[in-house]
Amino acid sequence: MKVLVIGRGGREHAIVRQFAKSPSVTQVFAAPGNDGMREDAELASIDEMDFEGLAEFAQQKQVDFSFVGPEQPLAEGIVDFFEAKGLRIFGPSKAAAQIEGSKAFAKELMKKYTIPTAGYETFTETAQAIAFIRQHGAPIVVKADGLAAGKGVVVALTEGEAIAAVNDMLEGQKFGESGSKVVIEEFLDGEEFSFMSFVYSGQIYPMVISQDHKRAYDGDRGPNTGGMGAYSPVPQISQAIVDETFAKIVEPTVKAMASEETPFNGILYAGVILTEGVPKVIEFNARFGDPETQVVLPRMKSDFGLFMDTILSEQPAELEWDNEAVLGVVIAADGYPEQVEKGAYLPDLTKLAGVEVTHAGTKLSSGRYFGNGGRVLLVSAKGSSIQDAQRKVYEQLNSIEWNAFFYRTDIGWRAK
Image 1 (cartoon, rainbow, N blue to C red):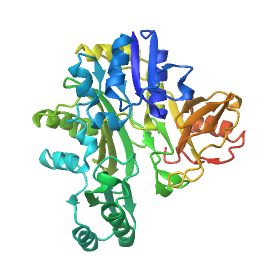
Image 2 (image 1 turned 90 degrees about the horizontal axis):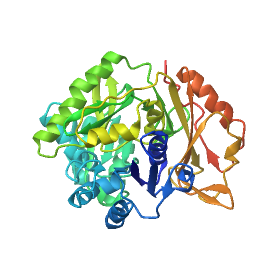
Image 3 (image 1 turned 30 degrees about the vertical axis):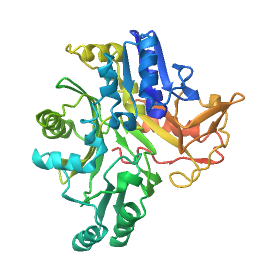
């Protein structure tokens, strides 16, 4: 089979690599991809928002199906566009992608179908939002309603922080149109985990769970980021809780979306928190998480290409997973997630042994990679346990100098 992966980041590199490993897949294309993907895919310099160009490429290359990585083309309706041209593509329709594209839509869906989540209110007026914060106090969570590249969430530990976040979003338009409406919700304390599932035509195929680290610095301190590292499995979350999450969150959400006449196909990502013994939804995404994909897909034993072809054909399928643990650490450019410093050369990556390097924001020049984004690479390892995988990754990272880049030294510290 020939497969087209749409996107350019670390998540897409992990997807590309998994397809490249599949015995059923003869060729992988990535559009636009990144320089680090060249070993695993043939790149096509077509922007992920150029639907016409991507569809023409898929037709010309006779790809068997396309797989969409990032949220923006999904929110803008790439799946509807491809399907109207008779092309096979995996992802949610524009209507179904609202589950990520609008926090208010997701919260209202959960409220209507009694899917457990934090209490909340939605605001477009600054004064009303501030009054709500003063009434409820801190800690409290402020979210931009729309897409904000994983950065539109402020966990405010003081009322002042919460009010500043509201002013940034509603008045300062920090996230543009995405922040013209805010969702303010109660702060939930507990263990977080990511529960991702393949969903197609009402069938749900859950993946192994993972946990990512959102804060920029060690000890879960500093600003929220798109994710500084992740690991899978999550030993402190029992199988009973995973089963309960599937039964009370994942399955009811898929049924709810069908009832609302916005049936969901694609990757349903549930960001979940175990609070006082009960799993509750923090957020939904309509695509693979980043960096969770980079630690979940390497644990897949099944032929990824064959699995995808089978479910797209609406045939029964099975997924097999490896018992080994995977832990990945993000290398970010100095200044991330605020003022990112681009253009610095990375050290010689060939010196890293026994680990997998997934490229996100890199470019190749004269045989050397340099940083061209906030999150630049993810370095991961497999191990017999989280601690074993962690040791392997950090031994390699600590063996070379990362001038102009930084990484957290404690990814996996919550694993017990």
